[in-house]
Amino acid sequence: MPEEKLTSRQLDIAYAALALIDKVGPQGLTTSALAEQLGFTTGALFRHFKSKDEILSTCVHLLTSHMQTVIMAPEPEASATERLRGRLLRISEASYEIPGLCSFMFSTQIAHVLPQEALVRIMSTMMAGRERTLQTLMEGQEEGTIRQDLSPEELAPIVMATMRHIIFVARSSFTDRLPFAPTSTELTETLIALLRQPEAS
Image 1 (cartoon, rainbow, N blue to C red):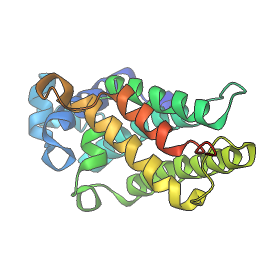
Image 2: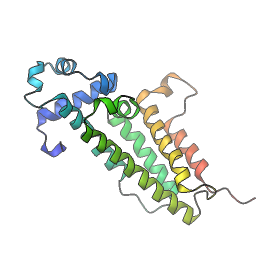
Image 3: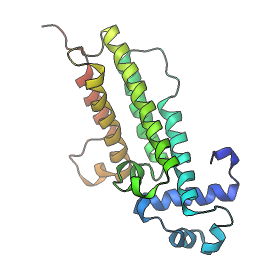
Image 4: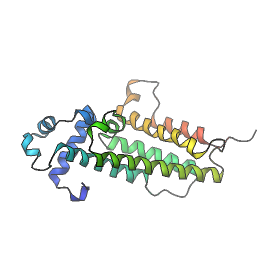
């Protein structure tokens, strides 16, 4: 359900569900736990949503809408590597702002717990991110800033995997617990170094 069509109470419930999903994963969300967190009865939830599936679909809509805005945001005229750097840093910042994002991205159970429309929306968002990445890599190769020994199709999975790892690092606070864990900025700079066109010797 689009955010502009949600009531304030529905938004409260959806964001509470995302906060709970951040702790237990989408497969761990129960209406009883959500109602308890909100101070509702379970029956009160269903005055605002028809089912748990509708709550999950709304959560996915909020997440993907935010991520589409981040991934597809207008970018300044700059080299492909600079645009990729900015995009990765935006994703890192968004990861702190969106509870539940990491849990959805890394859950092995989402295909079993999400309604079909929510799965399709997640896949569409991922495909949009991949297509923009491919376009940026192609432009970088044309301008000579991205290495040309590998095709954009071969480089894109490396970029997408780094994006996923940045989200994981940002949400899990690994860098606070493990001194050797790379920060989002370090991951970004390593990726940019790997993507750069090597200088001729």
